Image (tube, rainbow, N blue to C red; front, side):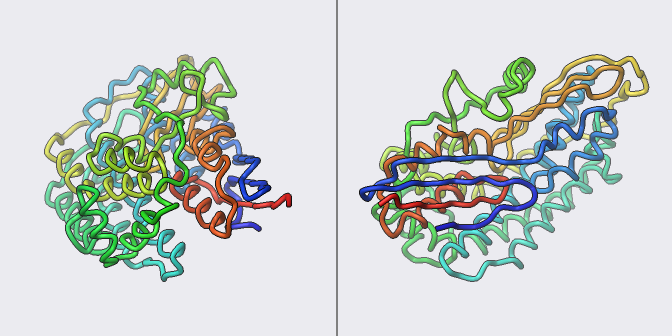
Amino acid sequence: MSVAGAGLEGSVSVRLETAAGRVRTIAVQVRRPAAARALCGRTPDEAMRLVPLLFSLCGTAQSLAALEAFEDALGLDAHPHTTARALLAEAEAATNHAWQVLMDWPARLGEAPQPKELAGLRAAAAAIHPALYPARDGLRPGGGSLRPDRAALTAAIAALRKGVERAVFAAPAPTDVAALERWAEAGGTGAARLMRRVLAPGMAGFGACGVAALEPHPAGWFGERLSVDAVFSERPRQDGAPAHTGPLARRTAHPLVAALLARHGSGLAAHAAARLVELAGLAERLASWVERLNDAEPVPDAEADATLLGTGSGVVETARGRLAHWLRLEDGRIADYRIAAPTEWNFAADGPLARGLADASADAGLAERAGLLVAALDPCVASAITIQDED
């Protein structure tokens, strides 16, 4: 049987073969167009106009990673823009989390999605860029003219807070397991009802495996590996082994997530709770960034010099996990460009999905559980699951 479908932007295909009531073979394959190749031969300015068109789901995060890589290669110090860029990345990540919680989760319960609530959150997040850069020039090498409008930023953050509180929690966000169980049992929102489902016996620990979390490695760590190994972008490794990245990797120390990890391992319950923890803390994180903002001018770049040479790397934390870019400039144009994306970590042939499905019970609920695990690891492309019973 097949679940979901594959889109034009790429796909993740998961094939499970079962026998004697267990999953015996797992094959995971990621297919995506060579977007990085489309940037080769371009100038930095041309590439920055193209990046958000190539990556529609995380266009801001991809642009920020590209910016950091270009600035590294060009020797530009854009540190005055670091805080503003963190705000932009957090806001986009929030809308991606919200899509999961308000659109995907209800559909998995057979409930109606909440597009109006999602649209409100996206509108609030979209207001952040012009509130930072009135000329909307923040996504360029060296940064733009940073003039924070604190009133507009406060209003956008307030709208995000209210939207999350109303649509996701409808109650104080749970901070420990007992509160999470009470909130889930009350079932006041689609998120609560999904959480109630994944806390059920046989669900909470489904997908738990021994794959380590991807550490918050700096851009240089990725740059060293991408520059010497063209295969790293397709099959990334940490200390020679697979790793998982995303909300669970970031929130392992949170008391609620840590308690679920201790009780159920890195299964569905811990993944879902980590996403909710990130949404619950969104407004506080954004407000803390706003407090640290200062006006800043664009950093003059040297793109006019056609003899520019250099390599650079950039890294951004997205909703789906740690994203890294590396590039090489020759004569002022991109000679090589490589990307290590979260999907390649989470959907590696021997990564957290494959290991989490190994030897799973092949009963009538396997398709649902496998689909929830794929959604928890959150590919940036369409996914398809095929289950073949060899018996």
